[in-house]
Length: 206
Length: 206
Image (tube, rainbow over all chains, first blue to last red; front, side, top):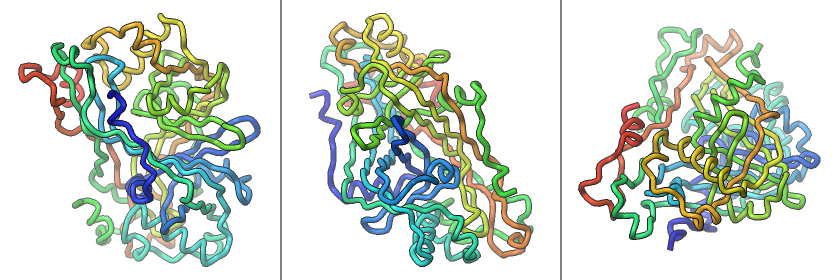
C-alpha cells in the first residue's frame, strides 16, 4: 500500500514532459572505476537530447564517440510530511536516460543543437541573439543522445501513513515546491535604452 | 576573461553550504559498464553525508560496502542571458563529492542518520514525529559517505559579453531563480483540529 504513490512510467510523453520542464540535468559517466556526475544544460529535439555545459566541458573533454552516459533530470514538486520518518518523502518526477553520447561536430547540427539548448532555457531567445561565429561554434562542446532508453520515476499525492498514525497530533501533508523567477538584473554594460524583449517578458509573466 | 565568473572552490565551508541548502542530490554509481544516476535525499553531520531514498533503494540494493559513488548537489541561482548563445550560462553552485559509500546498519547510527536526513528536509520535524519502530528502521536504506574528497563549482555574476556585443539592442542580464514553498496541502486523513507545527510554520514564513 505504502508504495502506491511511487511508480515507474515508461511513456515517452512523460519523459519528454520532465525533460522539457527541467532547467538542467545531471549527467553521469564512468571514468576508470569512478562515476562522475555533473550538472549540464540540455534541450530536446524530438527523440534526441542535446547536452551542453561549459563547466562540464572540461570534465567531458574526453567524452568520446559512443560514451556511455546516464542523464537524470529531476523536478521536485513537494515535501511529503508524514507522521513518522519512514513516511516522509518527496513528490518528484525524475527522468532517467541511458545511452551513448556522441560529440556533435558538424556545423549545421551544432548550430541546430545550440539553438535547441538556448530555446530550452528561454523560448524566443535565439531570435534575439547575435548569430554564433565559426570560432564560437568550434569551441562549443555539444553532445547528442537518443531518448530510446528512457524512463520516469514519479511520486505524487499525500503522505501514506498507517491508519493508527492518523490519530497522532502531528500535521501531515504536502508542502508544494515551485521554481520562481525574480526581478531581472540588467548587465552592468547594458545601455539604458535596451529593455527586456518578448522572450524575457513572457517568462516573467508566466 | 570570459571564464572569470566560473571558478572551482575547494573550501569545506562552501561545499557544506551547498549541501545544506540543496533539498536533494544526484548520486552516481557504476553498474557494469554503465553509470547510473538517481535522485536521493541527504543530510550532513559534520564531515559525513548521509544518503537516503526509497525510490533509489531498489537500484542501490546492491550498494555494497565501499561502493564508489559521486554525489552532486546543484543549486541553480539564475539564468545568465548574454547577447550570443556562446555567452548564455547559468549561475549555479554545484558540490561534487567522490567517495566510498557504506550501508548504515547499526541501529544507533541508523537512527541518527535518519534524524539528520529528516531534519535536513525540515528543521524541527524530528521532534514532532512518532519514533521509528525497529521494523521501520530495519527496512530503511541509508548510506554514509565522507566529505573528504569534495569540491564546488560556482558561477556568479552577470553575462560577460565581448565589448562589441554590448552595443547590440538585446537585453542582457540575469534572471534570478529561487525555490518557493506554496500553501500546505493537508493530508486527507488529517483530523481538522491538527494545525501545522512550528517546523512547518517556520518554513512558510522564511
